Structure formats: C-alpha cells, structure tokens
Image 1 (cartoon, rainbow, N blue to C red):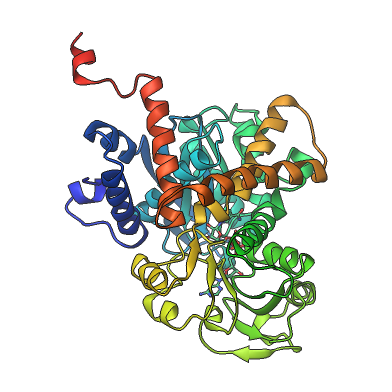
Image 2: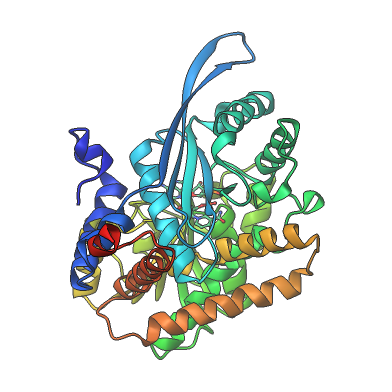
Length: 426
Ligand code: NAD
C-alpha cells in the first residue's frame, strides 16, 4: 500500500514505517478485499498549519503544527495533541492510525486522530504556550468539533492546555466543552481521566500476568517514564502488591531490588528535584527496562525498546504503556525468546475509554463519581482483554489489530463507504 509520503517520493520512516509494515502483513493474512484495505489505509484528512509566535523577549519564529484525522468510520475522530520537539506529519499520521485501531478495539464510537506542534514546551513561558495554543486551535477549528474530531492531552500538553482550548473555541463561536477531553474537573473534565491511562496499564499488567499463570503480589516491575502514564501505573501497581524495582525519566534511572516507593519518588520530583537524584535508591545506567525484573513497562516515548535493549531484557512480560515503544525487530527478538508483549492499543486504552466517558458526561450534562468511572473504565478494559487473550493468533498485537481492522471495515461496509464495483455501476 502506498502512503502519502511514498507518493511524494519519500519512504515513511520510524513509527509510520512500522505501522505500515504491520498493517500490510495483517491485512494480507486476513485476506481482506483490496478496496477494503485501501479504504482502511487512507487518512480522511491531514492538516499542516504554520504558527507565527512572538517570544517574550520580542524575537519571532514560525512553528509548525499538524492534525491528522485517520478515520471517522465509527464516529468522530479522537486523539491527543503533542507539544514536543520533532513532532512531524509522518509520526502524527502513524499515531492517528493507532488511535483508529485503539478506539475500534475497545468498541468506542470514535475514529482516530492525532495532532501536535513541533516545539519545546519546557522552554516556553505560560504566555507563549497560550499564544501557540490559540494560534493552533484557531487554525484547525474549521475541521474539528465534538461530533467531528475531539482533542485530548498527550506528551507535553495537560489539562491546562485543554482548558485554554475550550475557552479559545468558545470565543471563536464554538461553545462546546466536549470539543476536548482531559479538561480540569471544574470545566467539565472527568474525575478519573488523569489517572485513567496509568491505572488501566496496571490493570492490564495484572490481567496479563495472571493469564501467564502468575500472581501480581510480589512481582518485580521495571517502569520507564514517570509522567502522566508511568506515575499512575507505578502507584497502582504497588497498591496491588507488586514491587517496583526500577523507575526512570528523562533525567535517568533509579533502582532498588527491595522495591521503590513511587509516592515518595513522586513527592521528590514534585518538590523540584530530578528523579535520578532521588536519595533512597541506586542510580542505574542504561535502560531501566534491562533491570532484573518479571515485567517491563515502557511508558515514556516511542522506539525505546531497540534490538539492543530487547537482547538485554530479563522480563517475561512487556506491557506497552507508551504508544509504539517497541521497534518491530526488537519485538521479533522478544517473541523468539518467548517474552509476551501486550501492545499499546490494548494496554494504554484506559485513557481513551475515560475520554469517551468524559465526552458522554459533557453531552448528558452529568458528572459521575470517580469510583463509578473507574469501575466502568476497568470493566471495558476487561472486556477487551478477554477478546484479545481468547483469540487463536500468534501474538496479542496481531490479534488486537485484526479485531480492530475487521470492525472498522465492517463499519465502512454498513455505511456504504465500501461499495463493490458492481453496486457502484448499478
Ligand atoms: P508525559 O510527557 O507526561 O511523560 C513522559 C515521561 O517520559 C516523562 O517522565 C519523561 O521524563 C519521560 N522520558 C522522556 N524521554 C525518556 C527517556 N529517554 N527515558 C526515560 N524516560 C523518558 O507523557 P505521558 O502522557 O505519560 O505519555 C507517555 C506515553 O504514553 C506516550 O507515548 C503517550 O503517547 C502515551 N499515552 C499517553 C496517554 C495519556 O493519557 N497521557 C494515553 C495513551 C498513551
């Protein structure tokens, strides 16, 4: 299947190339008709915007933003917004496709999208971030909306950025809080959204580990990334009796074979220190995922499990908290060694499930309790897990993607998007 970048003369790289390779292999195994494969492959819309920004010191720059809506076959497109250096159209397209498969797999009435701005939010003042958010949102406002494409936080964005977006859209004539999810609770956000992805990852860890015949109680865990996902996953895993023997973030890795206290690490980081300088643990050089442990959880960024990292890992189970953390060749090496990998679209689905419930609550003008929403999110993850773990396929990623491809294809058939040539002539 040819992609946008291929038809423009450049082969897709990184995430998009991995996603295309998996897509081609699995759609070929499923023997889907060519027209179906073509329709599944194509993005509905890709938008690139130029964003002039005046910095606080008076200097100016033009930054680039993107929004890719891959599919709206099952409902409004849905996906996060990244503020991160190096954000580009290919990665955004790959992440938008992943959202389509993820929402379909978890049976949500959403399609898939992703967006972002190539910027370094850590170097921007609050005024600069607000101005950039304003420019970006106004530039894409004609193609988004609560029934069209719903935004959310991702790497480098948070509830504050979502709150700004709601206000900016309202002032531009779209007064609808359901245009974004992951908002502050006071502005219609869900009470469980902030913890949902990490708690969901921990829940899936437990289900998968028990599926492999073990108890989570006392299991040793190494966790990479201590942001929105990693922090909540670590706290929940300890709550469920696991031992977190290693943690890392961009500042480095720390380890303690007797188990770290994630709350104490969180307090240390929240008081302005680097995680790597946490005093009650050893420093660990190299990928924290190569520590002696039972379960490894990449919850930072894409591509962190390289071939070299995979070859040095001890874990029997990898659960992908981040999107796209395992390079396909590394996954093959893990597979050859009998290491099970729970893929991103299964493991980190708690976030988009919670976003869906926030969207529902906004439309109903209701606010559920945190306990109620947590139960609903974990129930939905259980239902997905049972479908994935039961199917007779070689790897959980292939099973999950196959389920998603079939569901999106069926929606396109039912809605008349996939008419056969004969029907079209009639
Ligand atoms: P975040 O920005 O809150 O946290 C990212 C963490 O990774 C930070 O602790 C950062 O220091 C760390 N990090 C960055 N580079 C690292 C490196 N080389 N080694 C170790 N740590 C490193 O982001 P997040 O929201 O937690 O998202 C993490 C991943 O989970 C991303 O792939 C994101 O797309 C995915 N995800 C997030 C959500 C969500 O609800 N936030 C939902 C689904 C998927």
